[in-house]
Length: 116
Length: 115
Image 1 (cartoon, each protein chain N blue to C red):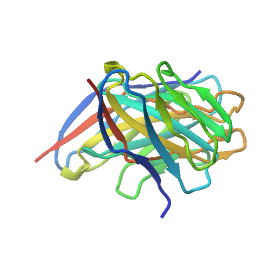
Image 2 (image 1 turned 180 degrees about the horizontal axis):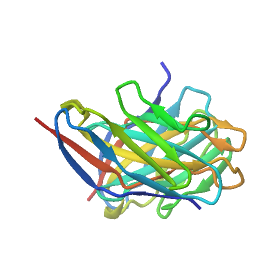
Image 3 (image 1 turned 120 degrees about the horizontal axis):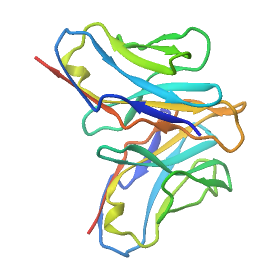
Image 4 (image 1 turned 45 degrees about the horizontal axis):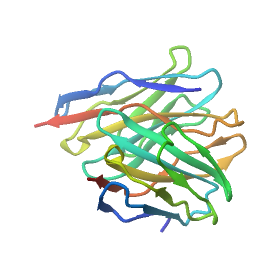
C-alpha cells in the first residue's frame, strides 16, 4: 500500500517570496503523483501531475514539481507567490501496478497563506 | 462541459434518518470514488468503483453504502447517520488506463451535518 506525507501543515509566506511545499511518498511499485489545490470553500482542482517522462512538471500558473525517485519526493515550488495562491494544497499518489490497488491516497494537506 | 455533479450541496439531518447523496459524471469514466474531508486528516477514501456493479471499500467504509447501477452515477448512502459522519464529502471520477487510474476530477462537495 502507498502513503503520502506532507511535512508542513501550514506555510505562511509574504507576497512575491518563493515557496516550497514538501511531499514524500512511500510505495513499493511505480507511482503516479499529483498535486491538487483547494481554494477556500471550493472543491479540489488538479494543479499538476507526474505520470512518466520528464521528472519536472509545470502548471499553467507558475507552479512546478519535481519527481525524485531516489528521495521518494514530489515537492511543489513557485518562485514568486501571489495573494491569490492562498489555498490548501494536497499531494496524492497512486500506482500503476493494477490488481486491487486502484486507489488515490492523499496527504493531509498544506495550507499556504500568502500575506501582503 | 465535462463535470462531476453532487446533490445536495448542503444537508443538515438528524441521527438515524437515512439519506442519499447523489453523484453523476458526464465523462464516461470507469472509475468513481467517494471521499470525506475532515480538518487535519486530509481526504480519506470511503468507497470506490471500477465499473458498473463493481465496488470496493476504501479506508473508511463503516456506516456507508454505495451502488453503481449505471456508469455515470455513484450514490453514497448513509442508512443510519451519526454525528461522527458530519463532514465534507467529495465524489470523483477518473479514467482507467492499462493497470492504473489517472487524475481524478472532483465534484463541488456536499457539506453534511448530522445532529
